Length: 347
Image 1 (cartoon, rainbow, N blue to C red):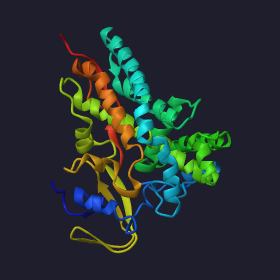
Image 2 (cartoon, rainbow, N blue to C red):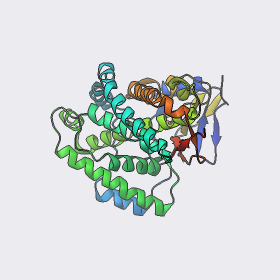
Image 3 (cartoon, helix red, strand yellow):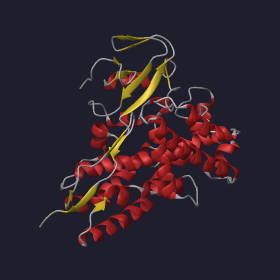
Image 4 (cartoon, one colour):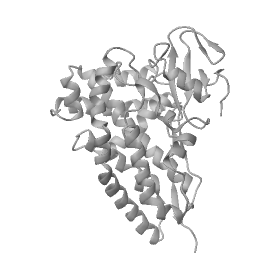
């Protein structure tokens, strides 16, 4: 299936590319379609918000998702070792133990007549605990990490007004300040120590960790939440690959043209911001994780965790019903249920 031809969306301010084949071609040409805008704030930050961030030295120099330079390969290779296929496979028992315990607790609460939010009760914490284990990071306040993550996603991919930006900037500054302290406490084999060992500056180490600690767990929570939403009340669940094809938690991603370019039959000028549709347009499931040199390093882990979550929660999901229309996280590049409040089906 093909999407619409590339088109300029005045409301969004991007050239939108929904056709999966064209999106793939864009991702495979990072020289023409650069990642420089990948983690820029979609809504420009106010002076007040920038002052809050500046006070803690907040900076996002090119490292991974926003890096088309020579350092990208070195940094990516170092981080990729934490997510090797062997390490991903080895963490499945932990993911299953963490998820099964939360499903059991939710099942007991439902049996007692309570309503349960499956996002907070089941989907939220296991991905964070798993990725922290893989990155060898101990003594992390997981609820704080989850709150920081959601706030940062809204700050960089949402439409917050100036007052909300200021709130979110304080949260991002707190997160960044915590990262700077952890860099100073790095051990030889944890994520921070490995990055310091590459000779990266503190700013570069924090930039890698800032979005890796968000993407490594919050987007997986959102993928699991979406999979749960599509499965509630059904005995036959969608597989993870179907969810990735049709409703990934990361439905779009950004690029910017370094020179005039052609997308399909459409001419696009230099300096044009491009928004790629990664899911829901008939493309392959793999496109949800990107293609090429910036493909998501945690793709294998996200697939495993989503599969484990659906397996552990299968009986629970088949016997519950939604008690409200779920409120949604709806950002430029992130979409998932914010809450899945359920009760037992009658009878």
